[in-house]
Image (cartoon, rainbow, N blue to C red; front, top):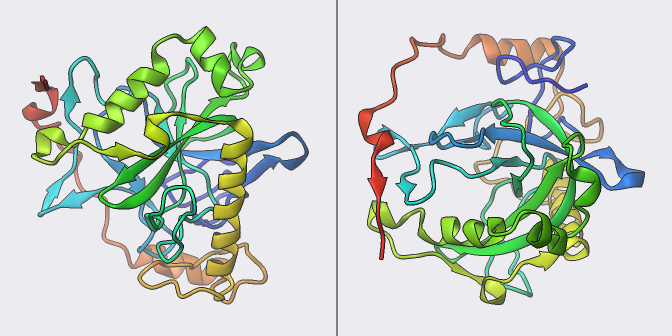
Length: 275
């Protein structure tokens, strides 16, 4: 079982990268994928796998020297799903997608998990894929995979994107609305989508994930220039970036100690109303 402790260890106490060392598949034969939860549902802190840091810990994004929080755009409170990423995937910023005509956003592929449980930050869950939305975020392709935890009580009845419309009416429409408007309170225009904001089905989404896995493979074996991305890992045997546990421990030891947790800023609770 994969459990991230202190954001950089597995359940055996070994240092790992949540980007590179957790397998993409939990069960390849059944098309069950691993998902790293970065942001629990209903929370606002913009947490993400730090792709440029050694061993890629989950950190809060910082913009203009301030910690980032997403606004509450009525009627939504924070993130409306458990939000995270599929490990061992990479949206290549040098590849122009034939469907969207935009290049990738240089991150692991994003997942919106729509089950009942509010997950914990750093939790690794197993999900099945239901579909995808193609967000165009500031000129970049930013796929949003729709998935469900295989342990969810409703998982057996959710097998494709049309099942979401039937069993969870309004959820897909709310997802489009959320992604369209979540940056508006920051003074930015509404986001756009490929396919006129229509969701693509499970097979399409799975093909997208597989293509981003292939881009990740090229990245981690140095067939593609990583740029500022840290490919340091502890388990990918054919990767020139693979390091020993001793070396990983030395990397972690160099990090500054954790500070005192501060209370959330009061503005995080503010509601925004958009036309």
